Amino acid sequence: MLPSDLELDCRGMLCPLPIIELGKRYAEVPVGGLVAVVATDVAARTDVPAWCRMRGQEYVGEEEADDGSPRYVVRRIS
Image (cartoon, rainbow, N blue to C red):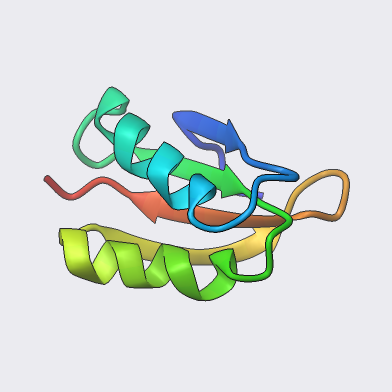
């Protein structure tokens, strides 16, 4: 599992709440830093990469959190 500068626990949140949380908080990490979004909502699988494309950030990929929940990793580019 990649180490992140910020991990957002969005388990149990439904679309669009995980993306809203990402949008509000990603600037807390330095440019080049990683934000991990742990989300159980299946829509996050497409929403996080789409948000990255729209916001000019890098979608690093999906991995599994310690509890088996999906964990989506984003690198802050700007």
